[in-house]
Amino acid sequence: MTISAICKRDVVATRRTESVIDAARLMRKHHVGSLVIVEDSAQGGMVPVGIITDRDITVSVTALGLDPAAITVNEIMADSVVCIHENAGIAETVALMRTKGVRRLPVVNDSGALTGVIAADDLLSLLADELTGLADSAERERRHEQETRRSGV
Image: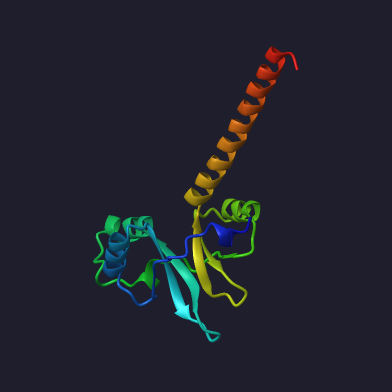
Protein backbone atom coordinates (compact mmCIF):
# COMPACT_ATOMS: atom_id res chain seq x y z
CA MET A 1 0.00 0.00 0.00
CA THR A 2 1.33 3.43 -0.89
CA ILE A 3 1.07 6.53 1.23
CA SER A 4 -1.15 8.13 -1.43
CA ALA A 5 -3.85 5.61 -0.48
CA ILE A 6 -4.00 6.73 3.15
CA CYS A 7 -2.76 10.32 3.30
CA LYS A 8 -5.15 13.16 3.97
CA ARG A 9 -5.81 15.10 0.77
CA ASP A 10 -7.49 18.11 2.38
CA VAL A 11 -4.28 19.81 3.47
CA VAL A 12 -4.54 23.12 5.27
CA ALA A 13 -1.76 25.29 3.92
CA THR A 14 -0.58 28.89 4.08
CA ARG A 15 2.19 31.18 2.85
CA ARG A 16 5.44 32.31 4.48
CA THR A 17 4.11 35.85 4.81
CA GLU A 18 1.12 34.86 6.96
CA SER A 19 1.22 36.23 10.49
CA VAL A 20 1.48 33.72 13.30
CA ILE A 21 -1.86 34.91 14.72
CA ASP A 22 -3.57 34.28 11.38
CA ALA A 23 -1.89 30.87 11.13
CA ALA A 24 -3.18 30.00 14.61
CA ARG A 25 -6.66 31.12 13.61
CA LEU A 26 -6.46 28.96 10.50
CA MET A 27 -5.48 25.95 12.64
CA ARG A 28 -8.41 26.62 14.96
CA LYS A 29 -10.87 27.05 12.08
CA HIS A 30 -9.87 23.74 10.50
CA HIS A 31 -9.21 21.86 13.77
CA VAL A 32 -5.63 20.96 12.82
CA GLY A 33 -2.36 21.07 14.73
CA SER A 34 -0.15 21.96 11.78
CA LEU A 35 -0.04 23.92 8.54
CA VAL A 36 2.03 23.19 5.49
CA ILE A 37 3.79 26.29 4.22
CA VAL A 38 3.66 26.44 0.40
CA GLU A 39 4.92 28.39 -2.58
CA ASP A 40 3.73 28.32 -6.18
CA SER A 41 5.58 25.86 -8.39
CA ALA A 42 6.82 26.73 -11.89
CA GLN A 43 5.25 23.42 -13.05
CA GLY A 44 1.94 24.30 -11.44
CA GLY A 45 0.60 23.37 -8.06
CA MET A 46 1.92 24.19 -4.64
CA VAL A 47 5.32 23.09 -3.34
CA PRO A 48 5.82 22.58 0.40
CA VAL A 49 8.63 24.74 1.78
CA GLY A 50 7.95 24.35 5.48
CA ILE A 51 5.61 23.22 8.18
CA ILE A 52 4.45 24.95 11.35
CA THR A 53 2.80 23.28 14.33
CA ASP A 54 0.81 24.51 17.27
CA ARG A 55 3.83 23.60 19.39
CA ASP A 56 6.04 25.89 17.27
CA ILE A 57 3.67 28.75 18.02
CA THR A 58 3.59 27.95 21.73
CA VAL A 59 7.34 27.52 22.18
CA SER A 60 8.61 30.19 19.78
CA VAL A 61 6.03 32.93 20.28
CA THR A 62 3.61 32.54 23.18
CA ALA A 63 6.11 31.29 25.77
CA LEU A 64 8.41 34.21 24.94
CA GLY A 65 5.63 36.77 25.24
CA LEU A 66 6.02 37.86 21.62
CA ASP A 67 3.26 39.46 19.56
CA PRO A 68 1.89 36.79 17.18
CA ALA A 69 0.44 39.51 14.94
CA ALA A 70 3.92 41.00 14.38
CA ILE A 71 5.70 37.74 13.53
CA THR A 72 5.38 35.84 10.25
CA VAL A 73 5.20 32.10 9.84
CA ASN A 74 8.52 32.31 7.98
CA GLU A 75 10.25 33.49 11.16
CA ILE A 76 9.37 30.40 13.19
CA MET A 77 8.98 27.57 10.68
CA ALA A 78 11.65 24.94 10.26
CA ASP A 79 14.32 25.89 7.70
CA SER A 80 13.76 22.75 5.69
CA VAL A 81 10.79 20.49 5.27
CA VAL A 82 10.97 16.72 5.01
CA CYS A 83 8.56 15.36 2.40
CA ILE A 84 7.62 11.87 1.26
CA HIS A 85 6.73 10.81 -2.28
CA GLU A 86 3.16 9.66 -2.76
CA ASN A 87 4.38 6.27 -4.04
CA ALA A 88 6.37 5.53 -0.89
CA GLY A 89 5.33 2.60 1.24
CA ILE A 90 4.32 2.56 4.87
CA ALA A 91 7.63 1.12 6.12
CA GLU A 92 9.60 3.76 4.21
CA THR A 93 7.39 6.51 5.65
CA VAL A 94 7.76 5.23 9.21
CA ALA A 95 11.53 4.97 8.76
CA LEU A 96 11.75 8.54 7.45
CA MET A 97 9.66 9.87 10.33
CA ARG A 98 11.85 8.02 12.82
CA THR A 99 15.13 9.11 11.19
CA LYS A 100 14.13 12.77 10.89
CA GLY A 101 12.25 12.92 14.19
CA VAL A 102 9.02 14.25 12.67
CA ARG A 103 5.38 13.28 13.16
CA ARG A 104 3.96 14.84 10.01
CA LEU A 105 5.12 14.68 6.40
CA PRO A 106 3.83 16.57 3.39
CA VAL A 107 3.18 14.12 0.55
CA VAL A 108 4.38 15.17 -2.90
CA ASN A 109 4.14 13.93 -6.50
CA ASP A 110 6.90 13.58 -9.11
CA SER A 111 7.08 17.34 -9.68
CA GLY A 112 7.30 18.05 -5.94
CA ALA A 113 3.77 19.45 -5.75
CA LEU A 114 1.81 18.94 -2.54
CA THR A 115 -0.78 16.16 -2.83
CA GLY A 116 -1.49 15.39 0.83
CA VAL A 117 -0.14 15.05 4.32
CA ILE A 118 0.51 11.98 6.45
CA ALA A 119 0.76 12.04 10.23
CA ALA A 120 2.11 9.48 12.66
CA ASP A 121 -1.43 9.22 14.08
CA ASP A 122 -2.73 8.15 10.65
CA LEU A 123 -0.12 5.41 10.48
CA LEU A 124 -0.82 4.29 14.05
CA SER A 125 -4.53 3.94 13.26
CA LEU A 126 -3.82 1.96 10.11
CA LEU A 127 -1.33 -0.34 11.83
CA ALA A 128 -3.62 -0.82 14.82
CA ASP A 129 -6.44 -1.88 12.48
CA GLU A 130 -4.11 -4.29 10.67
CA LEU A 131 -2.85 -5.81 13.95
CA THR A 132 -6.42 -6.16 15.23
CA GLY A 133 -7.32 -7.97 12.02
CA LEU A 134 -4.35 -10.28 12.44
CA ALA A 135 -5.27 -11.00 16.07
CA ASP A 136 -8.89 -11.70 15.03
CA SER A 137 -7.65 -14.09 12.35
CA ALA A 138 -5.55 -16.01 14.86
CA GLU A 139 -8.54 -16.26 17.22
CA ARG A 140 -10.82 -17.51 14.42
CA GLU A 141 -8.22 -20.12 13.50
CA ARG A 142 -8.04 -21.29 17.13
CA ARG A 143 -11.85 -21.55 17.38
CA HIS A 144 -12.05 -23.39 14.07
CA GLU A 145 -9.46 -25.90 15.26
CA GLN A 146 -11.37 -26.47 18.53
CA GLU A 147 -14.65 -26.99 16.69
CA THR A 148 -13.01 -29.36 14.23
CA ARG A 149 -11.53 -31.49 17.04
CA ARG A 150 -14.88 -31.63 18.86
CA SER A 151 -16.69 -32.83 15.78
CA GLY A 152 -14.10 -35.54 15.22
CA VAL A 153 -13.10 -34.40 11.75
